[in-house]
Length: 324
Image 1 (cartoon, rainbow, N blue to C red):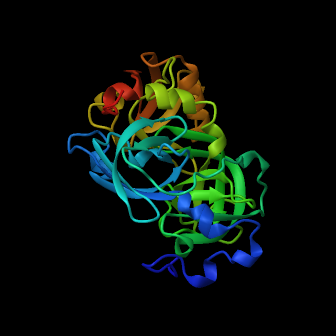
Image 2 (cartoon, rainbow, N blue to C red):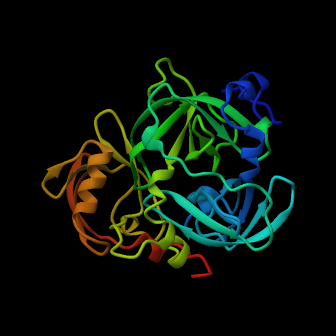
């Protein structure tokens, strides 16, 4: 959406207070802006950069902040700015790879009212929502839910029920998706040039349902991750084309980098043909926990090859939060 300005959402796309059942300005005091610094040798530095910024949501009076995970992945320093412009340093508590959420805690007083948690389970297509970043009503966007459906990301990521909305927010990372009562039901994750379910091609956003947070919040706060066996991770970027799954990139030093090349086409996992990304991920994770051997049949330079990769736990390849 090219109509967005550098000073927030254009007035015609901002929510009208008279049409809302809650105080928008007061609710938005619970949003904060984030800045993080990532070491140059981090696995995600090349793709996501070493200086990252976005938004977060206050969850309690003690400064617990929820955001989207890529803003804090492998970060060694973090800062939070509240709605009054007060800046504090923050400790990074967790990045949950499966859900995509990140958690921080401010190391100083943060003003603002923590947001009330809602649920994405009550949303339906056509619902009116607000997607808001830090900065008050000027950074709030009136949007419509276009779809609630599966999403597979090329970075070994799968959501069973992602929230798609349109039009697009100009600064979506970590933004708060609010339902009709002003409750938090999702966290902004992606910008999409053609959002699912919009009918005619239209830019929009994908948000991660907050429902995924509640079962893991205590573990993330206490341990920095969800205890238990980790999923097998290959460190590959897989693009789904109309007819095949194609390797589009590889994390340096990851299991995939030792065997696969960009441009390889994945034909089968073991003896099972794969052509769709969600099915590939489910079959990969069903093999067992991290460390399991992964047999692939690939096509390379018009040759069919059988290869085997020893998967690992992604947490062993990425830098961990320093407080855990």
